[in-house]
Image (cartoon, rainbow, N blue to C red; front, side):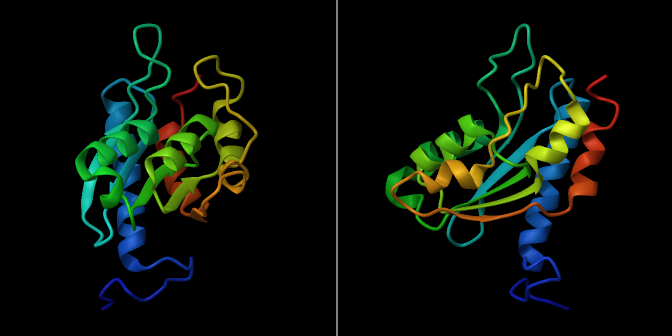
Length: 169
């Protein structure tokens, strides 16, 4: 049995895969609560979860900027402070959009691991007015910054697609 340090066929450790699957479970809980099916969590440098969030931006009452990734990284920053953000990882059920990628950058997250790609998300959502998906990979946003952010994904796309099936109709 692996201690989580051995990479899998995806290039991720068992611990990474478990945390990524947890972000998908958060997305499932968000959907069950009636909000958009996205989930994210942030771990500190030791791998301890310090923040977790589902999406709560469902219009018309919701705030469209409250994406799961943005909420999670903001909570992590409040909990850890700038110095404590060193070595943090964002695990997310879907690739961060341009807005969330900006939040990842500004809060000091060092690594992003995501499940569902923007391209696959667009296939699932179509032109739904509540999710006008950007065709802008987070890697392109991060490439414009002054500090590197490691990105790994997409991974587990079929698992991550499940919470979206039938939602965007």
